Image (cartoon, rainbow, N blue to C red):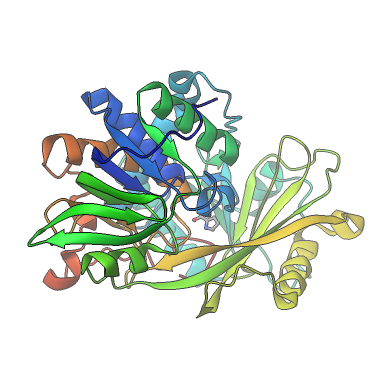
Length: 394
Ligand code: PYC
């Protein structure tokens, strides 16, 4: 679907580090600004990082005005992305239910619904009867460890085929002239004064007009090479998938108290994820604790899955920033920009990251949507707290 890897040229106008959904989306949208002398450098294969390891959930019911309008813009791009890329992304806007098991959770969700609605986002608090109607197969009886008092219901939320998003953006970027260099590892960045002049790779050195760090997990290491410090710690997040079973769930179900989020894919598999691990690591192996906790909580909600076999489990790297919002846009190095610190929110932001980062590169102006997320906010103390806006406790 894209040209095979060419030789590296000695220079590109734009070098994008990271062939995940953000890097590929940025290359795709750069083409709309007429910028086509672009190389994407990916140390593994495209989509081998966070883009291929998430649980494919798309939503915009965030807590802060800055977050809500940013992710809303992303959902809107996702809605027409299949058509734009001429690629079936299997986007199912089946709705998204965040369960509330305590009065406090109901209060927080009512607040989120208010913020969401102020920005025109379809999001509302619903009671147990509506929860039952939306997910008839879910056990909602009063005799559970965590009785369901209500939920935040977000109809535009849903799931999308993550590999297809990666492949669609890759094909679109390639058609626009960008070169995709898989299995090309960045080993250093050459900085002269306030600019990055070249990128060193295990296949040689390339000069660069602008460099974008679009990696997850490795973002701090790459920023270190540029002399830029990111306030990020890296943790693993684990997920798993069952064998296909008869369809009985057509809404995404999330519970932050039970640390579980799950959906049923078009193939019938249950895709399930859990809490972020509290330790920092780059070791993407699963743990028994994860499987025990996740399956216990899932079976409380869906006892029907008792006999379903797990097909696969995996882990991905999540970069956490102090306010759980991304770090996006410019750094103190003039021509070195970042898309980092996404926690567990990165995949759902891919199209809007691509569009806004491409605009930043093309115009050298910071788009309004990403201005609140600049690295600078940690120096000016203007944090954007998305703490507790997800099923994980970040
Ligand atoms: O924020 O939607 C989310 C999410 C899904 C899995 C982890 N976080």
